[in-house]
Image (cartoon, rainbow, N blue to C red):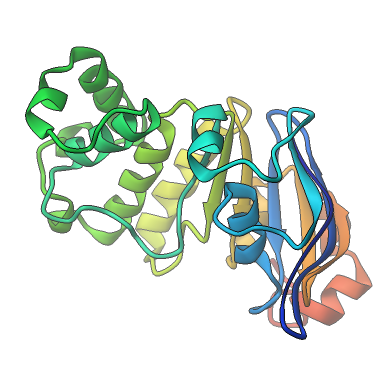
Length: 248
């Protein structure tokens, strides 16, 4: 479903993506892990179209999309969430999702009143909120939601486009155990219904969710395998897991 071939991106002498090859199967939940500065977010930004690689290629379902725009990729089925919440805080949860749906459909962002009257748009937005467990917060302003609920809202905004591929960048960052648990369960429910690429620091989350895991170190993918293979890999333990995460 999603593939990179020899993907490279550098800022001067700093190689943030160093000939990265990834092959993510349809319906797979593929996790990318690595130490800070390994190039994980830069990789997601290239897949989403926010950052242009210096060389190499990106393929979606076999089609080369390396030079396609963010909006084109959005319409073609790639959706992304971010490390830092990017919500319209004074708008209701429902309006945030409606605006996301409107953007994917290529409508103008100018008029909320017509948007609120467009039944199909409203139905899609309401369904996306239900899917993430926020149906009861449809009319709550985003800034009144708990932090974990704001992250759930971001997932709803990504899901409303009915993506083929969901890119999740540190979805549980900054969450307490309860919020994190609810979001992990949401991701688990989504597994198999779409292809998911997950960047995540929490090893319990990664090993509990991933079908396969790729490890990045200094922009280079050093290994890819099942959770069991990654857990037992000496090079991974040396570079990343170490004693601190050895139990994960």
